[in-house]
Image 1: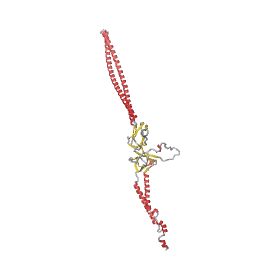
Image 2: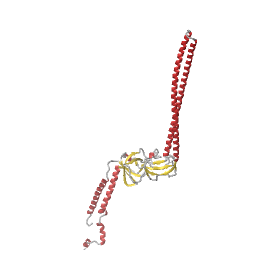
Image 3: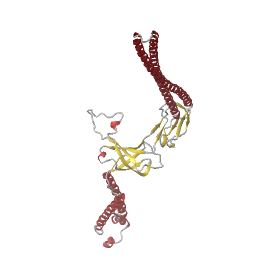
Image 4: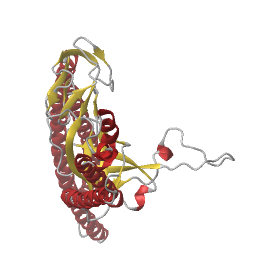
Length: 417
């Protein structure tokens, strides 16, 4: 009876005591094994992904968007008449941004235009006088040549009269001619000589007139050159006035978005006073990599770029250049390491990364926004699908081993134990 009672159904109190022995352990349950295998697959995938990226990429979160921000400033002073843009407005190159009251510059242009007209008139008068002096020089030269010819003829006549006088003297001494004939020859010689001297003096005087006319022509030429120079100077003044007048219309130098606007209609602005800034659409990434990371970074390497302002999207780029020096070396107060308490600090070097192709997005992006570039330092890269398949296979093997061990331990338990 005692054996039968021992082998018979257990009392309620004994059933509660024996249930934990028959129930499988928590770690040996199929659901736990499956969940553990899934968790193992996820851990393996993340581990493989981390290792693959560690050996094939160099990344940093010390990076930001950068661009050539253009400051808009007036080139002439004046009161602002109109402001045609609003903060964060998109503009195109050549769009009118600000207009300065142009009336002062209009008056200056009108005055310079009148001055140029007067200079042109003065130049024409001096040019006419200069041309007249040229004609006078030609006339004086012709008169001088005529006087030279007359002087030569008179000298020839005087020489002939002198020869006749010498013959008359010879004949008079031989009583071949009368005294009257001798006196006539003597008078003719004297008159011819006087005429020759007069013509010579006239030729000299006419040559002096030629020299005087040429001197006047040179003076006229210089006056005409001065008039031309004055006209050119007046023209340059007019062009400068027109240029200043055009500066009253401030236009956008390039495409971009208006930022930091600090001007309103009615303000009086000075030359070079900053009115606003234009953030261009062509931006790039400045990434501050550690100097130890630069061992494997080269110009031209492909880069995957994520931007904090755009979640879930990755952009493609390439390394455009690497700065020749750390960022600290070009700071306002560079570090002085020639001291006794030197502590080596890993420096960061700016690397310029261009978007390739240029970034196109509906989000507003600008200099200073955070980015996270990841440079591909090797051509080989394990695809994410392969990583997932490898992790899944390892997880399946691990799950099977886990299930095998759990089943083996359960079957090896003594019966009735």
